Length: 222
Figure 1 (cartoon, helix red, strand yellow):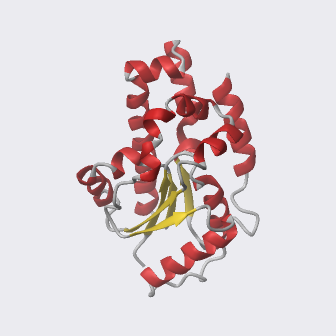
Figure 2: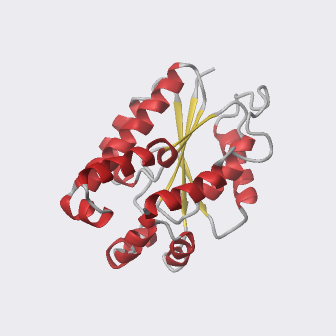
Figure 3: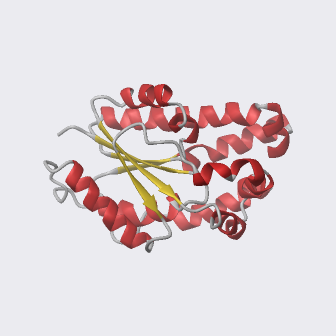
């Protein structure tokens, strides 16, 4: 069976992590790859070596280069899993790639022969600042400082460059939204045997997700 890459995307604060936690147990046999889990320790180490704060790295352009390297890691890991014949739930905002269709299509082509479906979370710009404040991570404080510039992106997202589903995370609980996503994926790919492999994540979601979220806040606040 052709592997499937299910790319879960969306701007920060739109509910990707909560949806991923609810969605993963419903995807039998899928591998899970998250850009933050995969790369944030490396980003933090790079910043410590450079002696720059996030604000300084952002102003100098180094943060953009680090961000591009993070996504190269995410895409490389996904390609490797596809090469092993695995289905993959790939999580990351991918905002730069989604805003540049030729770049996105180049990334999508690199996953061949896998099918690619895109799930994008979104939420009104009036909701997101409160979510970012509640999470209180270092990245989130930086985003809030730049909200006057970045906030407009939440109300005017670019069209999806490939087949995908838009999910407004204010319209249901994470479990309800995950059920909608799975039903849409089943309809998009009706020939797949979804229940053939038991889900390694069980019914409790991804092991360590909540713990990692807490650790990430601590890591990025130092």
